[in-house]
Image 1 (spheres, helix red, strand yellow):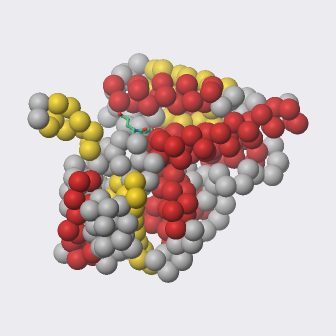
Image 2 (cartoon, helix red, strand yellow; image 1 turned 180 degrees about the vertical axis):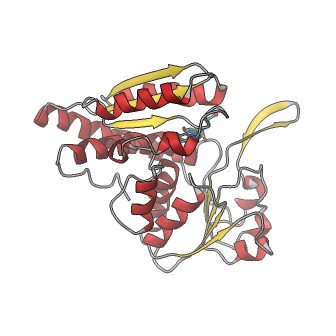
Length: 296
Ligand SMILES: Nc1nc2c(c(=O)[nH]1)N[C@@H](CN(C=O)c1ccc(C(=O)N[C@@H](CCC(=O)O)C(=O)O)cc1)CN2
């Protein structure tokens, strides 16, 4: 079997189109322009690229983009003061602090200082609790994008065996909650999981989010399974810098039924879902009906 390649770049473009339609309607019918504030602390090169891309795509769908670039040695008090100002600013419907933060800043404290209604990353402890209890929340962008691709490919996920490899707060745990919400039987595997290969071989859906280049080989994948590769790892191969996922794409695509590539799979969906979450946050804060198909 050669897997269907799930094209995240093309899928993300359809999400952005939907978002742009909703933004146009919000402007025309209600005189509201959704606004997204992105805060970057320091000069991490990858973060700079992601933040630039977020700003550009925000403007392209017709929303207001507010970029705040702070020095790497910014104090926690100054960062919290900026977040407080953004929390109180009615033109800002979504706030995102780009991660990772420099070591001297307490990530949990910073994230939990964002108003939960404006937490378009879905990382605030209130949103984590709401998602975990099946209530309406802001949903983390990477898991949301992964779920959208799975639903698009399968229709219903009900009753499927899903294995999420990785237990991070940003991807692994929320991904497992979303799959559970869609009635999958979910296993969360991690570095201490015994006989990981056997656990993965039982899965109809494999979500790999460990951050280890190509650690999941094709012979761990059940014939016909759907593989969502969340990993974005830069490695050197044949003297060139290349981007690879957590799954060995070459061998996995020979057994899987469908697979996301890296690059061009889950990555582009992350920013598209950020835009979707910002429109959702804007609608919720204005007591307007939420756009369909853009949330979990
Ligand atoms: N506050 C947040 N910080 C971080 C998040 C997040 O969701 N919220 N996720 C990642 C980084 N990230 C967005 O911020 C992100 C990562 C990757 C991509 C992407 O499109 N990747 C491309 C490849 C890009 C490249 O060549 O480097 C792909 O996979 O095709 C978008 C966004 C950590 N921080």
